[in-house]
Length: 279
Image (cartoon, rainbow, N blue to C red):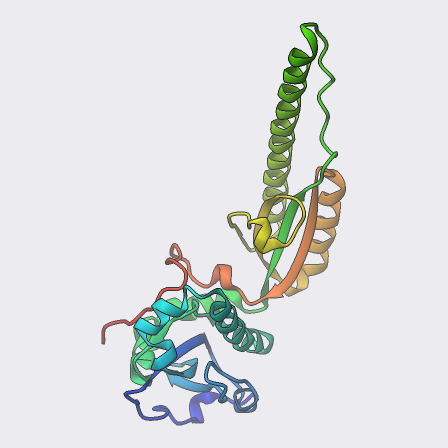
């Protein structure tokens, strides 16, 4: 892989009608990869090198990606999905080539000089992150409730007529449902703890709504795990072992993903922010 140290450092001149969308930061990038990777405007992405690092960016027309336009477009789910897919495609391509610190969606700067300034200002932090991410990938493990896998409450007995019997059955059903949710939640916590013990780092994200997950039952685990490439086989076997040990939840292993969950040590900022740092 050719070092980007030989590439032009300034990039295109700033345009009043366009900003710079940041996809991610790496140590080096192959110019051939840049040439075949489309950015937010459909044109090839480009490199902005500074301080021994490389930012991979797109030209972002302000009519669509300016601050006011973004505030409007981020409320449009169809637009948001298209933008997220375009951004992810670039980050995924970089991730397959080596360690990358992904930028958060909708990180837009005024010009390349601002991007280069951020690389210089955050050099120590970004270098440490790239060292930590090298040779490691993010893997997701999702856990879904398995109906009927938790104990059923016994049919209540008693007297009082049909109305009382109905109320007893409803109470029993609610009790069984609450108990099932508790058991599934306990299983999810146990699974996450076991997987975290075999990963370099772990994050437990809020469960996705069924409308997003597409699953027929509730999600109780939405975990992300940073796993060394040499440890993947053992990690995958552990997922299978835990699935057999906890039949009350269905486990799903996904990945590899770019390390979105581990791109910064400090607490993450709110998603979908438009960031414009000072000079």
